[in-house]
Length: 141
Image 1: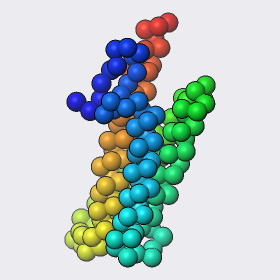
Image 2: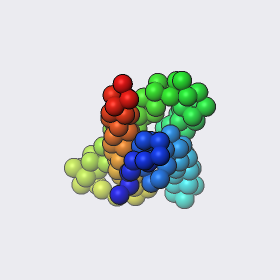
Image 3: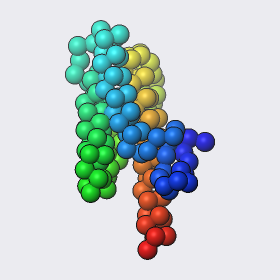
Image 4: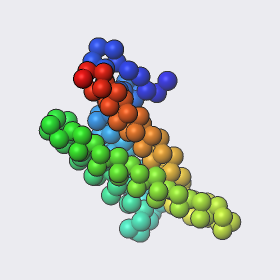
């Protein structure tokens, strides 16, 4: 299972990482994806770097949520908003599917599909983490 409850401190984890650390890895993944795909495809287009541009705030706000623990809730809510934007941006993949030109722009469609799938998974995990945190707070109070 990808997510689990760490019994020692009741922290929600994804792939054995706290949600904040998982978010940092996701931010780095997005940044590197955009750079690597742009390099491999030889694209000079601004749009090939969209995953990188979206990964930067995910990385920054995830880091800030660790650095400033009193503002963690605020920063992680900002992170999940970017996750939702990534997912919504990935929905553009279906435009290629519906118009019958899927994978004519191979790297562009692969990037959109990646954003769709990882954005959905990431947003889902963030929401599960928020629900878990609320349950823990209610249990404590």
